[in-house]
Length: 305
Length: 251
Ligand SMILES: Nc1ncnc2c1ncn2[C@@H]1O[C@H](COP(=O)(O)OP(=O)(O)O)[C@@H](O)[C@H]1O
Ligand SMILES: [Mg+2]
Image 1 (tube, rainbow over the protein chains, first blue to last red):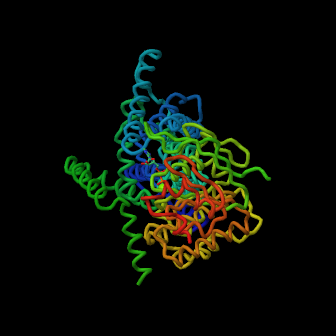
Image 2: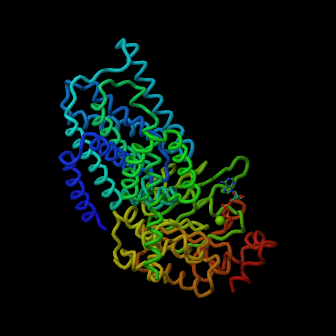
Image 3: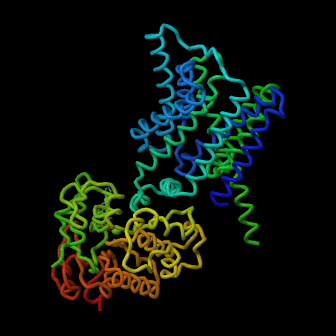
């Protein structure tokens, strides 16, 4: 499928999803919102981490920064602008720290990106205590829940469109080369540092914008809630289970996870987490390409008969 | 004489106490096909690392097309037209063979147009190397000798002005070596490339190059016409006990 077909399919899917507020109850719409948000987060995570084989745990930091942009700008900025600003702040932050830590690999990179999230969280807590006298803030005026849904849908569709374009253009090829053998890619003319920073920042833009769009769902925002590491872990899990090398994999996986989380967590809260943990271990050990790689294998076999 | 396309000036590389490359000078001009020989561990590969930006020399300078690139990252060398192969093939294993060749065309090769267009298509390059039938196969699934050929294809994809080949003939059959050598001569003739070709096995190289340099314990001990170099007492000495007299093997 080339870019144009993929983007047309995305547009069709997006339009269909945009009609959901007229079809679903409030409860189901909230569920759809959560699925769409995780799809956007997982696709933006995979955009950088899939082809390069980097394990970033910074999603929570980007997401949290986005929510804080909305919280700080609430009242002053229109909703749409907050979302844009949230994305830009997260992208700028990603570019800055990316320049400092993207030469690290593997566990070092994972740990340091996780640490970054904690750093931002404590930094904001400290700032609020020292200069504002309170921790956390209240968002007084929130848009309608349908508006939030459409905004999150728009940002997630933007993430998918960006992922398609990156995949099919030189940046995607550069990232795959970097993931496969960074030095070899450099000897063939890839400016690895620049490519990695650009893709990392682009991926952070969507996480930040999603945080900014979701912020209005909470009336009370505090660092502990919005820099929740669980959001980051869940994103990584969804992307890896779905197959971070693909775009459809993380989307499908986000939907399944969204539904499972909602229904199973209510009924078997602990068993659910145990099953998730096992699933992750099994996948990492036996199916590092995620569920999507099963389909690739199947298609490949069929093509060879 | 024209200005050298590639110039190493007193290049040295130190690994802790070990001097792997020791003050090597080398000038390569457009259209030249230069061989570098030397026993195992002589510093040939390390020297290539410095010529391609993979390793910064601890002393000395590297100039490409007159520009001093010492200390610059590998992509700067690639942008200046230096392309290389690796002794142990470093193909992009998950990518189809054709994408491995396309890679250089998309990056280093993008800004440079050759006089001839014969090597501007990934398909053509694969065909020249006899790899057309495996274009769609992930490179990691190719036999080691075919990965070695693909390494040459990747480097050609970068549309080089200087081509650095590190033991590309190792493990190939006689016919394959001959075909690769023909190809290398042909791109050199058609595109006016400068080619530097390392080979551990002296005999392979001597038949194909017009000039040969000899590295021994990191130092360049000879540089010139292959027949003259093969008779050089210092060279004979360096190769004694290693693999016999180079002259006899070259014959
Ligand atoms: N990264 C490294 N660290 C330490 N020593 C090295 C390194 N790479 C090469 N060497 C040493 O440098 C010397 C030259 O190696 P090399 O350039 O690979 O020789 P050649 O290619 O001529 O066989 C050898 O003694 C080798 O062990
Ligand atoms: Mg070597």
